[in-house]
Amino acid sequence: MEEDGNHNDVLININEMLVGENSLLASCIYKVPHEIRKLKEDAYTPKIVSIGPFHHGDDKFLRMEELKRIYHRQFITERSETKDSESFVSCVQELEAKIRDCYSDDTKLSEEDLATVILTDCCFILEFSLKLFFMITRADFWFLPRKLVNLIYNDLFLLENQVPFFVLEKLYNLAFPSALSSGNHDSLPSLVSLILPILPEIYIVPGDNVEQYLSSVGGVAHFTDLYRKLLLRPSQLLQSPGYRRQTEVTHLYSASELNELGVKFKVNKNSKCSLDLELSHHTLRIPFIVLNNFTEIVWRNLLAFEQCHFIEDSYFLDYIVALDFLINTDKDVDLLIKEGIIENWLGDSNAVTKMFNNLGAQVIKPDFNMRYANIFQELNAFSRRPCNQRIATLRRDYCSTPWTTVASIAGIFLLILTVIQTIFSILQVVH
Image (spheres, rainbow, N blue to C red):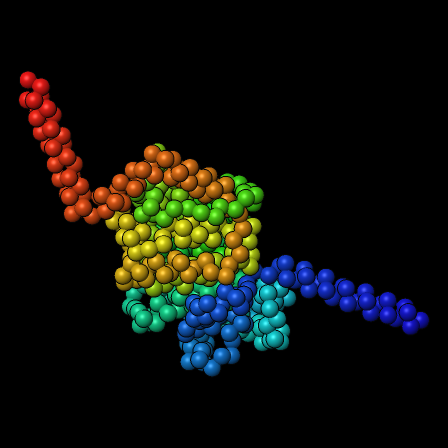
């Protein structure tokens, strides 16, 4: 009997482990791994508002809790068609187990507390987004100080500061059943259209069916995931998901070195995707990049998300490593700025160099996607040709600055005159 009891205990433990593993596989909202987080902790930590359970209860966010409660009340009692707050509470409570599974770490909150946090935060996000949307479309009064709005923007895209997107959808549909069912988006936008204005550096061309695209790639997990998916839209990288090289690319010349070897750099004006690098006739085309104080925060959180959730399809990491290869010194940054590829709002070129050189630290770098790997192979093969190496040496030694170029031309001209003079002298002696 005792052996049977031990056997049953083992089965219970194994079943608990399997349940935990299934829950982990369902996760989409993660705490940033310690080795990544310690490099720049403030890039992953909310500044002003906590969203979701990971940072809930921190004293530094208490002032914003009052604003969240105000927006929560306004959304339900003033904004929505459904004025019954009980309906919203019941909606979230029914989803509580599914919501809990979305978080990789134990939230330590009871069922009631987790439901309360998620409902309040979702209503805050929806009301905040609606205020902003109608302020833009109808020129309403500015509802919050601009600096505060920017800080909220930043916090809404942090990986640890997320709520599941399906909860936002459920509550939005519950709040506006007749307006959404009529399909009249002039009076009320779809949820995706509502969120787009708060996505930094994401430009949607009129006529693009973003919602159809998002549906085709499996929907949206949360705001960080939404940002990543829109960055990849519509990328040639996605044509073969999961198809990656078996060998690692370990070297690529920097932008200034490639330029000396004969590679030209142009801004890629034709691609809608920020990650689409194109190489043709020794010209590398890179989509336009705006670098500001928010860029590094978003990029670091996208990298952390890929490390946790898309390690085999980490296309954004590929892009960052590619730029890290190209940018080693200020000279590389200056070249890319000169060619109109980078718009720098970080200050001097050294700030850009440091940012790219530090972004890929402590991340796992799987093999590159095939498209990037082929580009790197072509660039390396072109760079290793002896004639290109000799041309690069001539440019570096004799044409590195306008003055050395003038001096080199003058020296060549003087050499030619000397040779001509010598020839004439020989001819005179012969005759």
